[in-house]
Amino acid sequence: MPPSKKSSERSSLREAIDSLEAIVISEAESAVMEVLWQRSPLAADEIVAELAKERDWQEPTVKTLINRLLKKGALSAEADGRRYLYTPVLKREVWLSSQSTSLLDRLFGGKVAPLVAHFSEHRKLTREDIAELKRIVAKLEKK
Amino acid sequence: MPPSKKSSERSSLREAIDSLEAIVISEAESAVMEVLWQRSPLAADEIVAELAKERDWQEPTVKTLINRLLKKGALSAEADGRRYLYTPVLKREVWLSSQSTSLLDRLFGGKVAPLVAHFSEHRKLTREDIAELKRIVAKLEKK
DNA sequence: ACTAATTGTTTACATATGTAATTGTTTGTG
DNA sequence: CACAAACAATTACATATGTAAACAATTAGT
Image 1 (cartoon, rainbow over the protein chains, first blue to last red):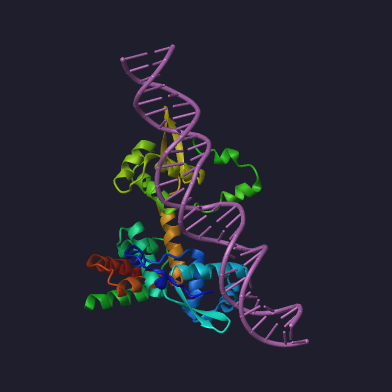
Image 2: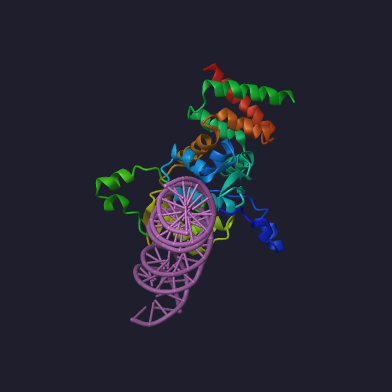
């Protein structure tokens, strides 16, 4: 698979602006990203092997996902002999942020407390969660 | 628009089992649901009017979304003369839960504390959030 | 040098989603 | 009663997504 030539193909201002849009990845694509966020760079067959543990995907399926991620600019590729090694461009932290902020905004009016209250009411808080939350709150109050 | 005839059309065991699957709604569809969660039952044109405030949708677009929601069983319809009045079947609480639990599981290993820590690190916690969190934690500890 | 294995590239195809136009039907009104 | 208004139902169409087969190129052995 060829490294994404996005930046060299880009020419117009419009495209330059487009490139600033957030990278959006699908659920299936995120599974590929998770593998690479764990360890990278990896070759396609290594990614396939990792994913085989959790998903019932054929090799071509994973290849397709890798290609779509390259096109989206979420991955980069460097040649390694006859094959390519892939590395995440999109950082997990950035993706996490966009995902969780989007949910928070859409479902809880952007407020964290109602989110936690929701989990609290549904008994989703473990003992450790509570202890940890206490620590977080204490730390925030000191500042 | 006809009331969803799902239950009367259903006949095979397979379909009965399918009907137990969680209702999944898209982003656009959720905008329609939000309107009805606010106030219901409502007629199609009332939903259209409400949505006009936030989205640039033509009337047929909203009708399509309503129909898809009916097919999915997320809405019910009752005849009101020549028109229909729509009411949510899917409860907001249930949808909230599935959405937030899914995010929590996929991104934070199912633990609430890391989620809050994430928002904390990104300064997404308002003063009120912190006070509220403190209250929640205190309440949980007492039990 | 030829062939099998490896890896990447192209094409495919069904369903979901966003967005809407077009068509059909009922009914109130002149 | 004919027709326009008000709704609903059907059809449309592009892009995204999940899933993969088919094809091509390169390389490593025999």
